[in-house]
Amino acid sequence: METKHIHISDYQYELPDERIAKFPIAQRDHSKLLIYNHGKVGEDVFYNLYEYLPQGALMIFNNTKVIQARMHFKKDTGALIEVFLMEPAMPADYEQIFQSKRHCAWYCMIGNLKKWKSGSLTRIYHINQKSVTLQVTRREPATDEHQPAQGLHATPSTHHWIDFDWDAEDVSFAEILESIGELPIPPYLNRETQESDKTTYQTVYSKIKGSVAAPTAGLHFTNSVLQSLDEHGIDREELTLHVGAGTFKPVKSEEIKGHAMHTEYICVHRQTLEKLLRHNVEAIAVGTTSVRTLESLYYMGVFLETHPDATEDELHVKQWAPYERLHTDGQVEHLDGGLIDNISPKQAIQNVLDYLVRNELESLHSSTQIIIAPGYQYKIVKMLITNFHQPQSTLLLLVSAFVNGDWRTIYDYALAHQFRFLSYGDSSLLIP
Image (cartoon, rainbow, N blue to C red; front, side, top):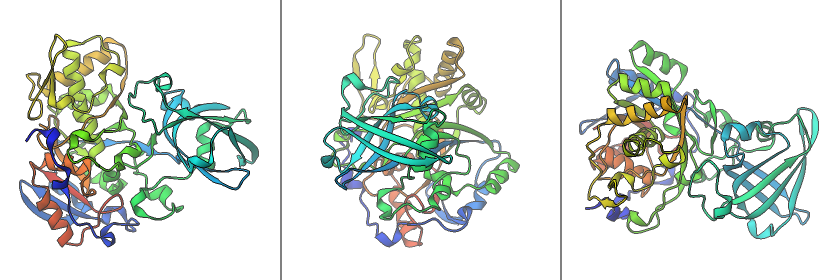
């Protein structure tokens, strides 16, 4: 079956609410670890992960950090309005916007929008022992005229341009978020954010602010586990994909061709590409976000083969790029399976590295909408560490593609052996 015609109903399973982990266990590296190895399933404890990995392998982590993206305001009428930060608008760069003083703008989702027709909302906060007045002003939903300058391409019409203005010259937007923002936890937890989530919903190696959801496969790692990987000879490298709220977006169309993937910002440093090449462009991915970044790099490299002068925006990987072949005359050929190109993963990554060298860039900043589903041919990822995902989700499609359709074996075992599911749940190591 052509990938676009996959029926999402084929990826349904019964997930009782009591199997969804509402909170993490006390010691994050004591979670259960399911091991799927060439069709055979077993289990262990996560801190023994290193025992199942080949010495000398390269493991890739997503070092994104979850921001306190929820902000609450009260109108004079008493109506409560929630402003949920989604994507930088001005400046469009993540690092710059957190350093902004006095003004910045974000694309946001608005809670209780019908109660906020127009105008500004104002609140006074105490930040760093001083009074700060913050004003937020809503523009209309995002239009072509107000697309992110960084080219993240598909800002949904449900996102509104919100201007943030504050009167403290020496207070950055990062400090405002730290003081008044609320960490967004997944909606399926059906509970309020707690103070403990500020620690437990971040990986121990999180560094680069920008996500509105955690790369949850990484939540099981502790400094002790990282040390055991080092001692076992596992090479470690990091990249950045800022996780958007679209990661929770359910597939509502009967066939997946009707589902629009969200766009996510990625950053990969030159040294990561160099290390990939030294490891024969093979990697163990920690989480589906690392998978999407690594596999997107291949298609960026394929594009550079015939478009060496492309901009970083033009390297954006469109949703169906892996299932199409772009000819030199601009014609698109639709394929029944994942694109098996005559460009090797090594050549593709070398193309990306050469691009950075040619343009005197230390890192690649682009974006991806890639959908990975059965029929996809993995190029770089050879092993995957991931949690257990929601029924009928794009993440379950990604896992199914990785294990050659054998996802039910994994999920049936997890359900029968009391594994905990979703963001705060247990982990798995998948070796197809």
